[in-house]
Length: 253
Image (cartoon, rainbow, N blue to C red; front, side, top):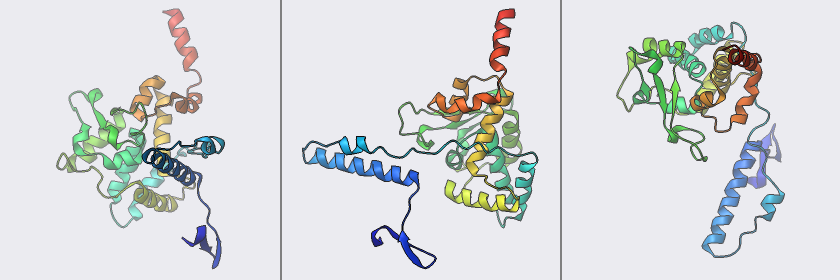
């Protein structure tokens, strides 16, 4: 461990940690101390933790949107990858159209795609609670991600033709979101896209819903898995006239 030291440019310097890592260690330490106090039957003093709260889980939310023509550049850049070119194109579009977290998509199995060609509006992606990042939070439940037209077409034309066993993963080509994120970083470099992360595709998809539909925040949260509606308030600016339009619709009815 070297006392928290690391080597940078041949010199030993103090190791630095991201706020998320510090937060993880903070709660791990508190949990361990509380467990020890319970096992050995003594009072656990919470004051040091109350006096020293952990850093926030994240900084200000990212606002990165796809620029005009950027999606086309990303898809074209997939052709420069050594393997899984088409699957990379599929998952990039899937992330935008589904608004799902990358980790949820990678855990998705064929049995989770509830596809109804006779009634497209009834088609959805089933996301079990245990596959969600928020699975351990109060209020987390299984959810259903309804399909917009583009997602329905993607599933029908490009995913289902290679459907395997119901228990098989739909995207088994990457072990986890970190591996996928590294591949996406290379794609962005080839596409000359800067400051774009795989999670930004989810943000792009959610933004589209706010801009192009009249779904309420509650309806959207059921699709996206946001437990706190306050998290969705930052998208409200994308439909500034919707409140007035709804008010006038009610008063003229």
